[in-house]
Each structure stands twice: as C-alpha cells, then as structure tokens.
Image 1 (tube, rainbow, N blue to C red):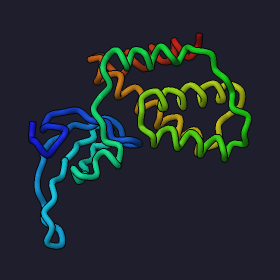
Image 2: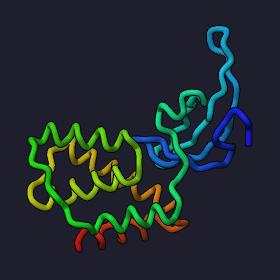
Image 3: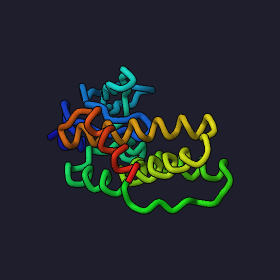
Image 4: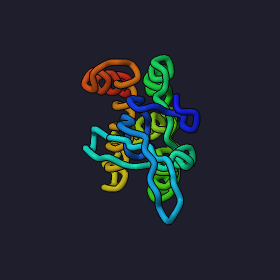
Amino acid sequence: MNPETEFNIGDHVVYPLQGVGVIKDIRERTIKDQTKTFYVIYLDISDMTVSIPVDRAKEIGIRGLVSPAEAKAALDSISGKYEPVNVDWKARYQMNVNLVKEGSIMSITQVVQGLYHRSKIKELPVQERKLYDNALRLLIDECAYSMGRSSEEIEKEIFTYLEK
C-alpha cells in the first residue's frame, strides 16, 4: 500500500451519490505550482472516470466497500418494520438526500425502504422517484460487489425483503 493513500490501484470504493467504482490509477498532478496526488476512479454504472484528490477523499466520502456481513445486515434490515415520517414531501426529500450523501450502506437502505413503502401508498413526486431509483442502484451495486453476487440476484432479494 502506498503510505500516503488509503486505497490501492484495483480497489473497489464507494463514491457517495455515484456508486461503486474501481481505482484505476493513482497519479500526481501539478496545479497552480502545487503537486497533488489523485485517485483515478472508474464508475462502471455511469461509464465515467473521475479524479479525486487523495487529501480530500475522506471529506468527499470515498470509502471502501462494506464487508459481506455488513451488506447482508443492510439487506436484512430492509424487512424490518417501516415507520413513516410525517413531514411534507420537501422536508422528507431533503432528509433522504442527506442520508444518501452520508453514504453509509445503512442510510441508503433506510432511503430505499422508506421511499419504497411510501410509493405503495401514493405515487412519488418525480424528484423523490429519481432519488429512490438512485439509492436502490447504489444499494444493489455495493451489495453485489461486496457479496460477490449478481446485481439481478441482489435486486430480487431486496424486493423479496421489501414485500415482507
């Protein structure tokens, strides 16, 4: 492991709001007479490559994948009792955006569970629907990579749990 970096080339990482990516390179760049080290991360889901300064990675929320046990715990928690939050949709939306930005698998699971159950009561506004779709994709991706299973298997399992 490079002593200045937490991750190595080939490591899978989670980029909040973007999903699971793989570190393709760690390179130095000079910008305004300052040399900085960057992670070059390829995000398969969006076919996009991003460069993140190593010294800001934690602040941005870049983290390693959860363990298979943590991924399983997140999936299991989806079937838990759902407690609706009684606030207007704008406050609920902002609360859910903040949970997704937080980037933990449990906060993303909470958003998926809440918006899924709300969608069963009433159709979600467009912004909430997009947020739900994004959170669901993030959850599926991380669990699939972490557990070494296909996205299709994980998605089926999530919906099985949500219907309980």
